[in-house]
Image 1: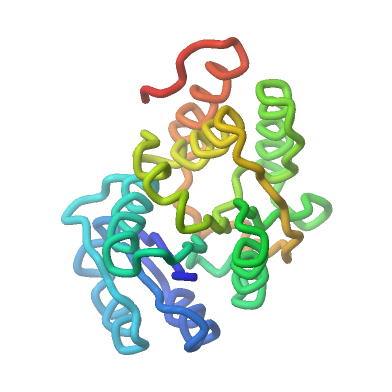
Image 2: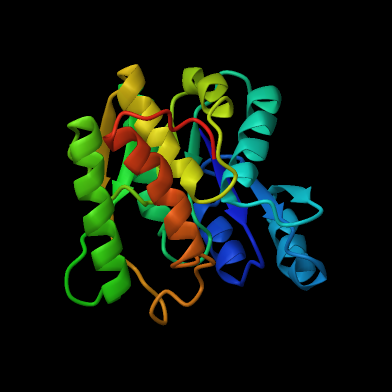
Length: 228
């Protein structure tokens, strides 16, 4: 299982996660146009053995994920992928657990969080709404549709590369496409960690939320959600 970490203006949390993962799996970091300010952190990631890929300009999380998936499919054929955020939200032990689940089952696995006290209000409301809409659109109950901690079996990589969406909407489009294709989606409970009210997130509450809800609402009303 290969670890895929898309980053934009990464902090010290990236080398911390790589250090905690140790030699469990090769890691691919995709720098999504972080600029000169990201150089020191990315150098630290290389020193820890990670492969670092670059986008010259910011293209969005979905584009970064597809860049990493394409590289992994070519460099490590036959290996599954576990995607994680490197902003301090995902613990190495949870990354391992989600990866292990997919290795054992051969199914998509999501690391899902609890949204109780201590979680920022916007996150509780946003995740509750998207989970309800996703269930209405697909009939599937997924408590945490916006998690970035996901594992995919190797045979899904070509399929993942064909799913559109350059921003945060890509991850929602993956779930909708999985539901349409009949790919099982399993969930694994993981720790809920928000640092400084999730200040490290680059998710825009207005612009990115609109992109996430567009394919979700299209799926709910039976429209074609394939285009951005």
